[in-house]
Length: 159
Image 1: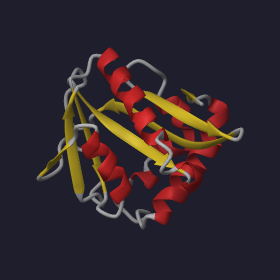
Image 2 (image 1 turned 180 degrees about the horizontal axis):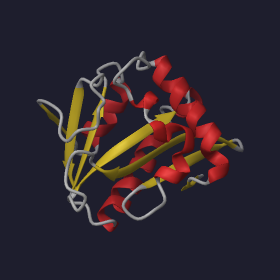
Image 3 (image 1 turned 90 degrees about the horizontal axis):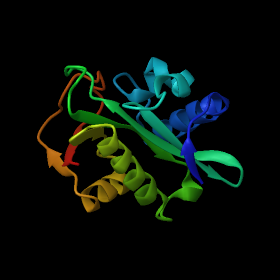
């Protein structure tokens, strides 16, 4: 089940982010695992131009993803960033990522964005396959100023 994040989800989402990023070797400096918002995701994604959805599986938060304006650009920018989209192993390969990302892309358009940017690491191969299948094109380098200098792979998609 996909639904908007609530304050009751914050601890589970923080654990999800920390576990999956560590699994993929993305726990050092320059990765989103260290973003202050990780401990209180519901506060960082209140709706409108910053939304986060969780995926419940067997009564527990087992996935999620969100978006918000791309840092380092003017506040009224038409470029958003796909943020912190992660899944626990039992959810992977079931089409849930495609469904979540499709929902997020619709919400991005509804929030007035015209393009979606994301950054990841080359180790997250399965995620990159999904991004390419859904129309993201790889960029030569980063956009904006996310502070995630640990990421080495960048994508953009028109909405």
